[in-house]
Image (cartoon, rainbow, N blue to C red; front, side, top):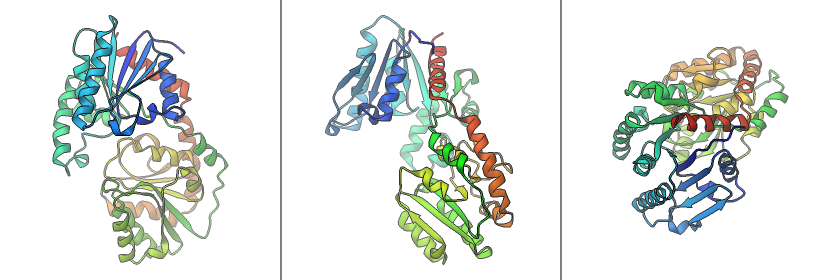
Length: 378
């Protein structure tokens, strides 16, 4: 592993990094070992009780501990400027989003000894992700300015890179680096999965019950499938503000006996092991890690064309990719597995193989992070 002499200041929302023993805390320690200094400034409120500052080797964790949202931004700026001004060497200031975090990060980086860097983990400039909220529209206006004036940008998919280029962002400033996927447990499920043509075909959704997931489209599509194929069932695993609305829709469509709602669990791989086909009907996704997890678990996938669908779902090979909002197309995609159940096996095996190729050892992924940061100041 190559070590960089660079000093990093990361600004964002990773509160779990402040808690010793968590996976996020251990990951920050690993990242810090690759740099001279690694500072993580986290937006927190005083009432949350985090220490103002923690140090583990060359990892420095800073909590803003403010009373208001504006106070968190101001405190993050003061902490960042104090770090930059206390040294004479180069810093890279990386912001977790192109909005509030970038507002602070750009202010901290202003000057000769810091380079600004923005990370975009979601499809934040997709109109479907912000048209419902005036505040979000205002944030997007500022975010567009940020990405056009940032020295370096890291995005998680080619899809998002393309959206930035359409906004006028030079391709040379954009690095594509997907979110790290911990797939070991899912790959184990996929490796030992036995695809048997059973009397029933079980579809599965995992995630939030929230508007952007467009679960009414999935439920209505399944209602049509259930009417045509009596051996089908649907499970919706998750939680969120739309749960009651979705339960009511299922009852209205007369499919309550065929649809199961399960509460959220951290053992998602176990649920995937007992279902046949994974379904995602979102209007938009940032990355959509669950698609990669489902592929690793050996499931064929029916998904709208969002997030990492272009990375881990090959239409007709390990799943079906449907246009966003296309209910007729979604019904057709689901029914393919009812007409020919053997596709569950052949496409499930293909899914597992695709996920194996996409899975990176964590040490390799960390080196890619180091390389991406280092290239920004060369």
